[in-house]
Figure (spheres, rainbow, N blue to C red):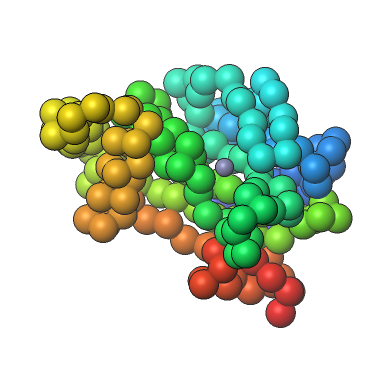
Length: 194
Ligand SMILES: [Zn+2]
């Protein structure tokens, strides 16, 4: 097949991100984190320092990191929640997205929903628009304004508010991509079998 300039062609032996995620040990029961770097965007680089059922700690993104991917396991996060909300960014996630927008070169944030049998069933993708990325100073300003408005400022809470504000202003987009055989349930914030 002729290779068209500027178009990504699958390389021989190249594995999809889904395959790379699914072959990670303990993927069904522990969260995992990866970066994709500019130089080699097809390879997921493991980034987790610790992996738990409902959290993962990661190494900080390098300057060439363009995407950050982490997974959510198929187990309920809170017993009190009757809805699963697997595909929803947690409050910690929201805070981290805003921090990354200010402090890193990351443009995409993906949350991979993993079934209890270890299958990747869909992606939540958060993307900051060009408009916002051109002006990271705007995010910093918003951050400082929110801090100034709070009586007892807590950076994580403020970052969550900024996340919601950016979504409302369309400076940030969140989209849901189910894998074949699955659909996204908007009410429950999760992917489920068709
Ligand atoms: Zn998360």
